[in-house]
Amino acid sequence: GIAQTSPVNRFTQAINDAINAKQESLVRAEKEILLLEGSFNDECNFINAIASGDAKEMIALNVSGTIMTTTRSTLQAIEDSVLAQQFDDSKWTDQGGCSSRSVKEWSPGDVRAWAESIGGIPENVVNSFEENEISGRELLALGIGGLKSIGVKRAGTVYLLVDEIKKLKKLTLIEHSPYCFGKILDYLRLKQLYSKGLLSEEPALPTVCDSQKNRFEKVVKYYFPGDSAYFIL
Image 1 (tube, rainbow, N blue to C red):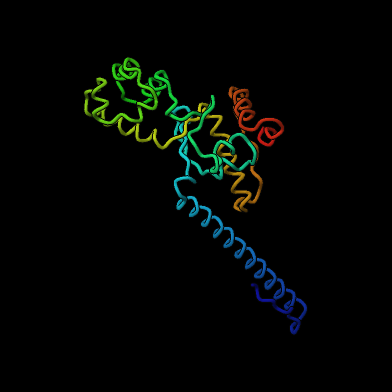
Image 2: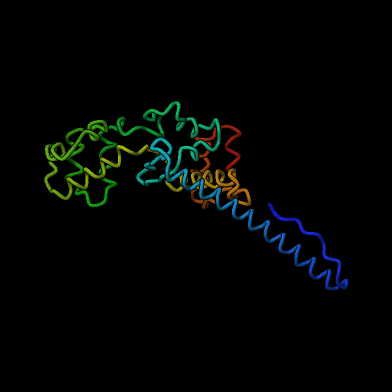
């Protein structure tokens, strides 16, 4: 705690006032330092909690080809929302539904689209996935030998695909605009920081460029149906 001091009154009025004003200033400064120290400790605890979180807390997302990483608690910041339910730990399974699907549910067309999104993959390799009708479940099972068996011969391409397949095994697919979903995710992160007292002011609503406003509203209303959408619009 902060030590309490008695007002000085044994000098002339002017000197007493100056000394007392200085003491009050020092007390205020000490209070501010203690508040900052507390906020700093809270933020360190928050960061450490994220850094040391287990695999179920850290979530890697493939948002239409853009990789985003966050925590489960951020995705569940708005209780009872579709997004929160989707990442509810008690229901954690491969995600289904039209806008978020497990890689295991990909069609050969989805696999082809995934291969096309990888930089440096030749067109004939992209075609080989479709020609062999490789599904998402089969894609996850492909290793070096499997890739060679469907016609991928160049060593560099083989190992690039093996690395990308490893990433897929850790990702949840979100089939929405990365721009729009990223805006939602950033806002939820700020809301979580504010709820923990790590931000002094409640975050402002997301700013969205005019060309994306309609799409943004659709994504928000999908994840936050009904009146809950208005907390972010």
